[in-house]
Image (tube, rainbow, N blue to C red; front, side, top):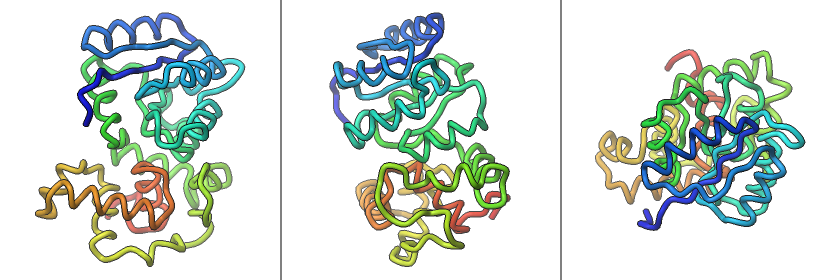
Length: 241
């Protein structure tokens, strides 16, 4: 993890929300390098300032947060990390944004402490998605849920390869070793790299290697997509193990 100051772009159509987030982040030594009132401004701000993290409102005029996220990540895959902001924890657009490569999401009533911790965490490559929220999203938008048709097609958005929701199991899952399957299952339970290392009695470096290999073999953008795939393939059950 770099010691350079954390650089953040805040994109929200409500000026009071932007101002509040700026004040909180700045008070904790995090540099808000730009603000944006809609998706088009957000895309331009990211291109101009090259931040580490983007706080992206999901519903904005001219261009919504989903399309803005897709454009940002298409221009610079893996950078910056995008956190979706929403007032609805089961918004269809939230699910699609996560599948498109967003690193997680926060509700807008997040506490200042949680906001700061989330921005710092996402920079390390960890996902901001609790197991409970993941299950609810998959139950609603995965196979058999209300949004199957809408949600299933977007799991591999932005990356070539087989569609993760088209069969009972992901075509590439058989390429994973038993240890990698174990790591993927634990990822889906929300464990961090540190927690994975403790659970499996491995070093964090070894855990990171396993996670990187899982993403490469499944052709996924990041941990969030890996968690979604774990649920959609049946490796982890949305209704419990």
